[in-house]
Amino acid sequence: MLNWTQLSKGIYLVKESTFRTNRINSLLIEDGKENRVILIDANYPTSDIDELYNRISPPALAFFASHCHLDHIANAYYHQKRGTPIFCPIQEESFIKSLDALVENVGISKIGLKDKYLKMVKKYIKFKECEHVNTFNPGLESFEYDTVNIETIHVPGHSPGHSAFLIKPKLEDQNRKILFASDIGSHPYYGDMCSNLKQYRQSIDKLETLYFSDDYILVPAHGNIYLKKDENFFNRIRAKINSNGTKVLNAISKKTPKTIKELVLDKVLNPKKKFVPMIKDLYLFWDGGMIFHHLNEFIEQDLVEKIEEIDFLNDKYIRKE
Ligand SMILES: [Zn+2]
Image 1 (cartoon, helix red, strand yellow):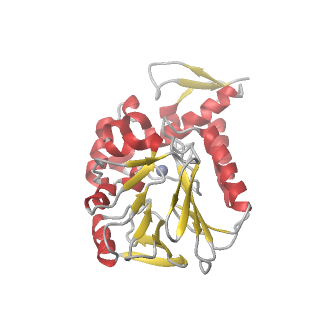
Image 2 (tube, protein in one colour):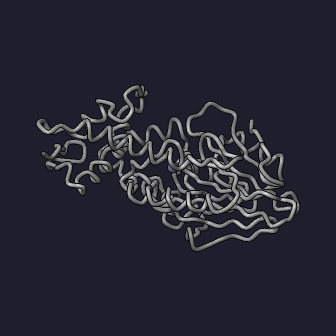
Image 3 (cartoon, protein in one colour):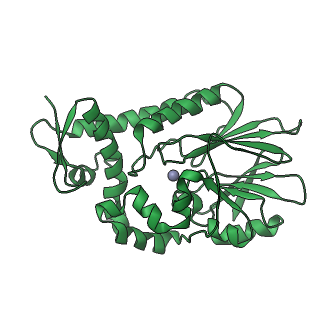
C-alpha cells in the first residue's frame, strides 16, 4: 500500500508502507491535465507500482531518478513497462542499464564480492535493467511542466551523478517550493569506490546555501521530511561524517598496522551494528569503503600512512607519530 501526503497543491509525498530498509520519500507531482503525473525516485515494490497506475492515468510523464543506486531505481523497469519514460543523471546511465557496469563502478568486483552481491540483488532486490533511459546533465538542465519547474542540482560525492531537485510550483495557489535532497541526509553514505568524501562535504555546503536562501519544504530521500526550516539539518550530517572520521582515526594505532578488513570486523563505524548473516561480507564493501575514504583524507593530512599489501582489504594503515 502507498501512503500519500499532500505537501503543496498537487504535490505529494508518496511512500510505501512496508518495513523494507531504505524506503524512499518519493514525490508525485500532478501536471494538471489528464491526470498525468511526474514521479521522483518512485521505487516501490511492484504491487505498489500497480496500485499507483490504477490511481493515475498511465503512463506517468516522467520517472526522475536522483541517482542510480538500487534502492532508488531497482524497479524503474516496471514503470518503463507501463510506458513511463525514465530519466537519470548522465554520469550513471550505464548503472541502470547494466548491473555489471554498476558493480564495476561502485567497486564491488574489485574486492572480490561480485558473486555475493549479485546473489543478494537477485534474492532481495530483484533489480531488472532498463533498456532505454533518457539522461539529464545535473546542474545544467531543468524541466518545464504545466504546474512546476524542476531544476536539477548536481550534488556529487554519494555517487558521481547524485542529484537534488528543486521543485518550483508555477501556479499562484501552490505556495511552497520543495527541495528534494536525495541521499544527502542523516545517514551519510560515501563508501562506493566512485563516492568522493570531499565532494560529499562540498555538496552539503551547496545544498545548505540553497536551503537557507528561500522557503523550502526539505525532503531527503530517506527518513523525516521537514515542513519547517530546520537550521541544523546539514550540521547534523557534517557532525555524523566528522564523528565517523574520528572513530576511524582513533582505531588506527601508532604501533600495530591495521587493515580495512580488521577495522570493518571490529565494527569501528557502528559498534552496535548487527551484521545480517547472508550479506555479512558485503559490509567489507559498505563500511570498508567509508573507512577507506576517511583513511585517504588522513593520509592527505599526513596523519596516517598506508603500507601496500595485496589488495584493498589487506592494505595496512598506521598512525604517524
Ligand atoms: Zn544512494
